[in-house]
Amino acid sequence: MSEDAPEPVTDADAVAQTSAAWSVADGMLAATYRPGNMVRGLEMVTAVVGAAEEANHHPDIDLRYPTVTYRLVTHSAGQLTSYDVALARRIDEIAAGLDIAAA
Picture 1: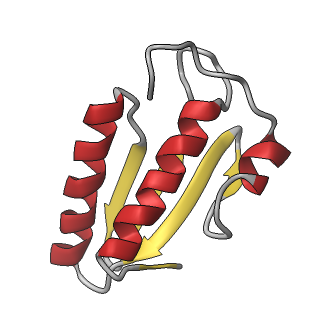
Picture 2: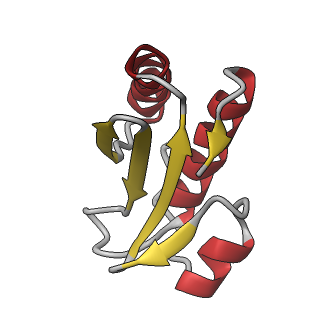
């Protein structure tokens, strides 16, 4: 994310600007991936945490066998923003790089 303030996005815009893995539920962008086992799930989570730290924008993460679910919302804005869309796209890139499919 940049130093600029995040731009608010509607639920529909957030879904339109992300892959089919993502949907909006309870005001958050959410996606679930199937890494196949806990080790690969943790590998993905570790990569996503690194990307989140770089962006200074942090997802809620639920690691369970055999899935990992990510939920995104800009807490400081109290809604979905461009930061959430950007991090969702980055999570998709990480999943693709690890050959992990969305559920």
